[in-house]
Image (cartoon, rainbow, N blue to C red; front, side, top):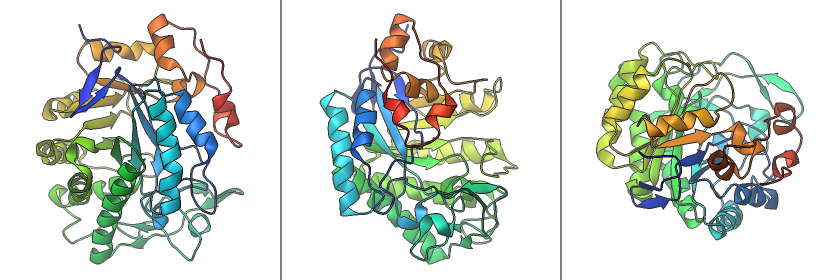
Length: 355
């Protein structure tokens, strides 16, 4: 029987175990230059015993930023700073993929600065508010990308992927989930286009496929992955044909030979689509399972029964930097504390004792 503590191969990248650290926004980058700080290197190095670390969302271009103090991979200075992070992880024997995240309409001119404005498939204003550094502000209507700008955005992802490899990352995960730009193209509520990127399913999946293909051509499919979150309403997303959208998308991605497919579930007890996607994808399958609270040790059974090849842990990894050792020992576990994790400069993330 396969267990979480057995090694696994991601299209040539060998992982020591099947426990992944999920991507989680930290908002720790230098505000002006959008570069990761020494604290970032410490934070990821502490968690290098994960079979795979997926970094926080990293914007592939300046206009892709969604939140204050998030890092980029579109300048020489950012590449150099990330090299310190990946070096720290590799020194401890870890593997780390960069998650490339273009926030699309989930942004604001106050966050972007430099006269930039949020962009999206269509000029549909998301409901809700965004934290812009000093408080919550209403979202604004994004500017619909022109056809040329869509192609430029695809090229931005490819360039950022090349930068990620130069910075020492083992690969790249494209963020196609949680209501950000790639997801906005997939969803009927945010994509009202009538050109080749809008309308029927085969057009709405086109942007995601083009981004993945461009990244795979730039750095190799064995270093390329994507994260999806079917039926996720986060960031005011509405989908009317979820099953068809995601099965056709995975069918289009399957021949590329990607490193892995990462699925985030949002509805506990509804695993039919997850299993359908698992069956359609022949590469490694990473699952962030739907649970009533933080993903816990009970989810390791999903590796043993073949539902997934790796399980991605979020909050539990923040509270327990040495999580694989604790999972193997059966605990004890520090309890995640949202009041500590999601405020201030996040120094609380690095202060927990190890076994």
